Length: 501
Image 1 (cartoon, one colour):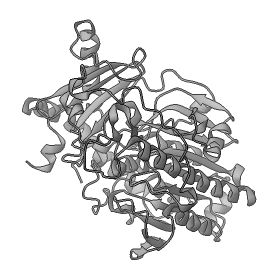
Image 2 (cartoon, helix red, strand yellow):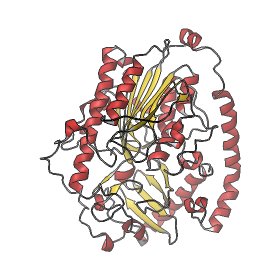
Image 3 (tube, helix red, strand yellow):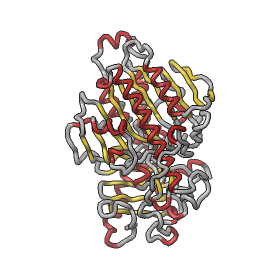
Image 4 (cartoon, one colour):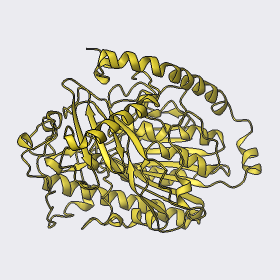
């Protein structure tokens, strides 16, 4: 079976119908991409010095990205024992979104969505496979557009995107694209002004500590008056869950509570489809990840990693305060995807259930965002790029599929996003999670596993926030079910499809 067919398991009739209806949309998308690229990615119209002298003052940016940090893995979100004072500060002094989501709960696709503001379906970055192939050159990253507008741009830490986005023009790069998340003697590549050097191994150092060391050193350099955009993307708390030595005994006395569904007998669980039951991502009962043998071990190491992450966030905040530029800097904190920690005995992500797709998202910028703002609108990873460009005063290219969340800083908007589309492609994969797509509204979620035999899940998230009662096929929900299926296809048709990378 070809790879393209593995990713898209529609019936032949569905594919013919979709191809006919979407061909015009795809042509318009590609033509728009090329037109925008010819202007937005052209050489700068003026020198950096001239831009700095004539343009109004623009904010700096620091974008902290957690690796698999759940939406509730913050003390500001009410976690019972995890303390994250530095991350909390961003939300306390800015805006916190309680319903933020990723559109493909897998590392590389999620990071591509963050960088491009586009869905996996449109970038072709569908999976964690073939990471040596770059994103299409006609799709700009938001950092490309910032750099053209006069910003100095840098990325440090775990990049884990197609080709590590090494081919893009970074003022400073200190990253790795290692899917094994090597905490011991980590490997990094370093580069400046678009030229990336060879991979070098660093011994006896925690990778996130090292990345932040390099970030602080770069911030000390002379950038000729340019504002900066710094991406600080962490390895922790991703498996294999190594702790820094300073936290060896952290949480040793903590009792990890079992989620309500931990002891459910999935093989006889009412309503859960076989695709869900047979996935190979169960704590202590499946073998692709030996580090995931017990809830106690996984959870404590996971939370210890987040404490280290919070410390490194604090180091950056302390530097910005010391240099008196904190108030001139937009701070963004998010995560590429969520993480199961024992729900239905699961670990990892991929599936379209709340622990996997919900992420933290907070933005601090007192000049435009009132402190203590909390919003419940549904926000997506594809919104981040547009939001950053909006804050920087840089035009948003039309092919970006997200939208700026900045208006929500001033007032809530119940119509901001009534529904959104999710799709997971990677197959085969170590966890045996099958390709699926779905739609989420404020009340309902419908999941469609697309490989034969096709299966479905349907939940009323208001009555059943834990997603324990699958309503698909129940007579009393047939009208809701049909409406969601139709809306799912309508959303899908609006997202142009690009060939898999």
